[in-house]
Image (tube, rainbow, N blue to C red):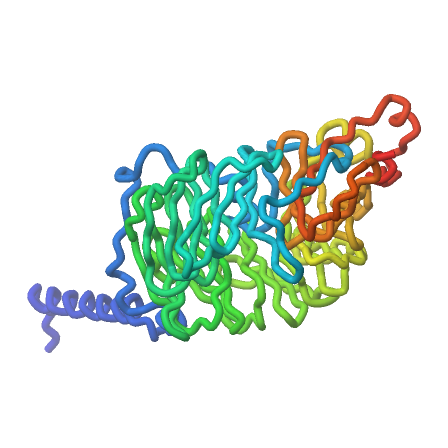
Length: 480
């Protein structure tokens, strides 16, 4: 005869069900080998959860930034110039400034950074600051058995420089005085990535051991340090601001995303091909290119691939993102400037730049209102244009909407590996084999490297009436 269960039996069954659910959830959530989550555990050491994060309330109210051109240099690596800056219709060469220390044949140019206060040159044993007329303001020397690496990272009041032996220098950028000095283990394999008041970098300890650090930039205090496992040659770091992720790529075909605050693994995508450049990121997406000539867009939030696109050949630089147009642009090995719809991955247009220069970095910048009218650009796109090195000594400026070449700037020298910088109405470029200006009366031999300074060309009313929007308005004509 059936007898209904008692209350104690109901309680026991409920307790057993809840216990089973808790066990299943624990296996799913805490076991890294469940549901193919093993790659995440292979990326970082097992003690990654022991790191310390400095709360926002403990930070000094004044940050180290603003970091000039941080967006295109460090965060997105998409080479987007400050949207507040608007470029004139054309630039002409104003002068050539010799470097403080002449570079002899076959030697590389000094590492170079620029801000509105001046130039910062890194030589092997010395860091030199000059004003924008290239007149020396101060210098800072390091010990004889060491040498400086990379370009200095310049903020609002301080700059940071790295040496081969693992010393990190924080200097007052106005006086060159040392604020603090930090020794890290091993060698730094890439330059510092600054963000707000924090510094991120990767070191190599031994042949195959790589570590990523997060420091408090004010004090030099270590926030966390994690070991990277399975990487062969970590790329420079990238920050995705939308999701607060630290990103790096590796030639072994992986894209690794780490949580900004803790350094824990967020996601890792493998089998992307041989990757030679850092990831580009904008919004919640990242774009990478591999040596097989394929561009790949990845949705970081959904952890899935958006699209893949076959480039004309292997990319030779990072991507540039062009705001208001929604396209990315990249220069390829065969000289083509290729543009791609960022959302769909469809090819937009391509142009053969015939670039022969060492620099192949493409970047975006805004035209001012006069230039928008002069070249009949669409006002809704707010003057955004694409600039690419082209030929043997030129910068070519394109209408991103149509792929139309609207202007060319003759550099009279070839770009080194550093992109040009824009401040006020001037453009500054570090040039190799600079040529003498036509109006120069000097008989001195030209140096191997020099800073080229260009100013905005303001056309006269007579010149404006003769010009049409379709003309390229070559800078050589402007100089005449």
